[in-house]
Length: 378
Image (cartoon, rainbow, N blue to C red):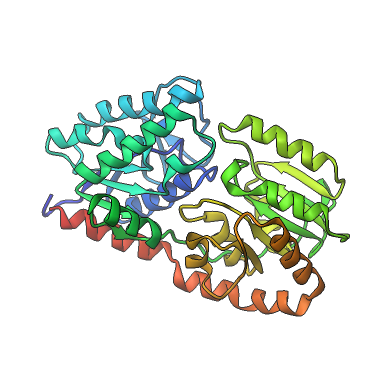
């Protein structure tokens, strides 16, 4: 690996470029930055997920900002999709002459032992303790837990996104890990255009929730609390489902009972930028997080944020957001009412959130620290 640029494989994401989940955002940001620095990067996407972006075909496959996209066939069935993809991606990667194979998320780490047998260096990023998430059944939780144990035993280096998960690996596996939190870009705020035309939204006229519609994100707490509040502001729910169709139906039924609640589905691009730029407050009521990309993004747009008091959220916001007790609908309602009645407090948080978060979390820092780990294995 000395005296040459490394060749790196990324395995674990559904697809890049994409922002449908934290893994996809991280792999997109890290891969493109590595490529811009002259490293050879190949990202293993899953079939069935259409790639959107300014990619082109150079005769050997798709390229996105210098990153080669390799699409791996897998089943559409949600229970088999990830495991079949991981097996096939790993087997394909064995012949890719990589210096480093970088696995993302616990599930894909179940195959991490295989390239180790062939002397290939492997890095694992644990984006969160996925087996704790309510959307997974017993078999999926077993696979995720096994992937976690495999990473702890075989990975050359492990990256975690929170101090809480770092402590967990230390206490559970006596394994040292590297704390490298996600980054965020400093965005330009957008005036209302698309979301005004499409949804009838006005600046400061809505409370914003952005996340996948899965139980651990706590959306049901927010809907229950919001429905008990007297306000002319809307509640905008931006996000799609992820293997949690029963939960999706549940929150749709809850939302349908209040005409102030607007469900947009998955949003990206200009419309998402406008939603972040013009919200009165942003709310993330999650029970479980790795490190929430949507929270970083909301603060990067200068939002006043209201978050559950789990360690992963408080670690991100420190004293620059309002917190409520996890799962406590009454406390969430009280904090919402307080912020709705006190614009001066909201504006105070808005003034400091962007500079705080963009200074604390930077993708270039993530790149430098990740590269240092790669080079450490030379």
